[in-house]
Amino acid sequence: MTKTDFAEVIRLYREWNERINVISRKDIDNIYEHHILHSLAIAEFHPFLPGTTVLDVGTGGGFPGIPLAMRFPETRFTLCDSIGKKVKVASAVADSLGLANVECVNARVETLHGVYDYVVSRAVAALDKFYPMVRGRFGKSVICLKGGDVESEIGNLVRHCGVRRDRISVSPINSVFKDEYFAEKFVIEIEK
Image (cartoon, rainbow, N blue to C red; front, side, top):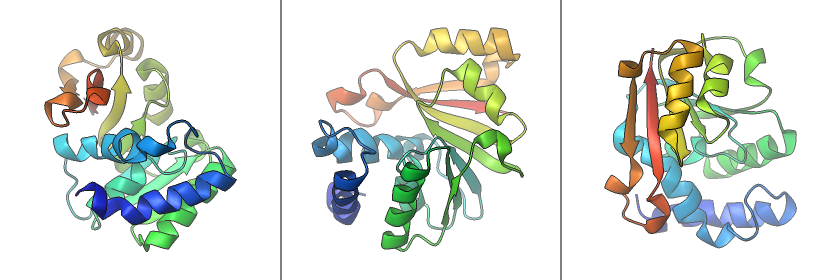
């Protein structure tokens, strides 16, 4: 999918961002590279099969959930955030795009019931803080978009949460997307 494929998404976010700030006003001109393409990095390393269920925790205005839902229309996405105005934007964008595979929920992840195949997130919290919040809510793996010193975070996850290091994979996004923005950004997958 190219930037042209996301022209309507970009237009909708620009429009909504004028009313409810879900993307930094300084960063809105980089929405495709910094938000949409960044979200789609997950798809480069982990395509979701039809019928799969995915919980996007801390979705904000809909990232990574909405770009992934567009990429995988046969996958069911639940976008969850505790901030109501952000969920309002994600819901409005999903509705405007006709994404029948998206449900937006205004809640804390700890209050949700059920188990999803995957949990995804985009820089919500340090891994050793995030993992306990979603433990028991996924059947296959947790997939996080992270930047910076990920080895330190992984070390803390292993020490504090009892996750085995061989269950964690780190994929550099700049191996797929060559833009300088992705130089120190990674897709981290924690298998069950």
